[in-house]
Image 1: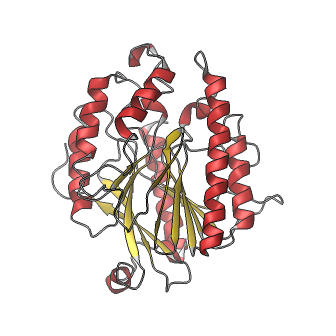
Image 2: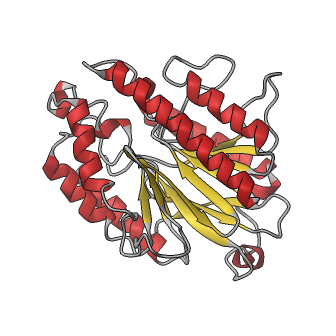
Length: 329
């Protein structure tokens, strides 16, 4: 997508925000402070699709400095820590990991397609995507907890868990809100394009379905007040999803039919800030309790998304945007 089209979509999202009472940027400071109060409210940051170059690393540093200064419970990076034109090298992975580790808050990182499914391209170094996925799992998801200086898995506020065999799939809980992340990436969810793609896709699809089903059962047993589902890709929504996303859309729909309290779908991939309700039921009607939030991405790296949860508010979640202060690179 071109930067111009992404900018236009960002403007459209701003217009939508004005029409949604739970997502108004102009909400009073008193109410926003209440969402972070000891009564069960909290806030977290949603970022993704950065950095996209060596020079863009300064944008990530500035953004993490901004989130560090905010009393957040965690930062969620929904994937793509490199562009498809950068090499899929261990050295680059190590450098980006060091930057993410600077976060003062626990930082939950999800995989994006640029990190592995697209690594067979000549600009990325003609790597074996399966081997690169194994390298990513060893580097980013081999320890129990999230990244960041506050990423101790034993910290009570997150109750962090990883899926066996697919450790990038994680779930955690804060109070009565259940979070879950699944490995869904761009480039048609990595369904084809390199040797072994279909077999990997089939295994990952089964594990994603199992992981979300387990988490749904947990949320129902816990009587969770809300469910937050995170993944990387901008999936094809209704009326017809492409082959790589059809099962995931079906799983999301099945989940929404069973869990009738607020659900947030968080992702990146298209680099445009969006708040809407694209998930539809069997009749083609939007699920009223399901909201999608897509974060900013390169080149819109001067902004991040702050999401707060207020158990006293009928809408539960408030979505706001924040600007990174200071000069931009």
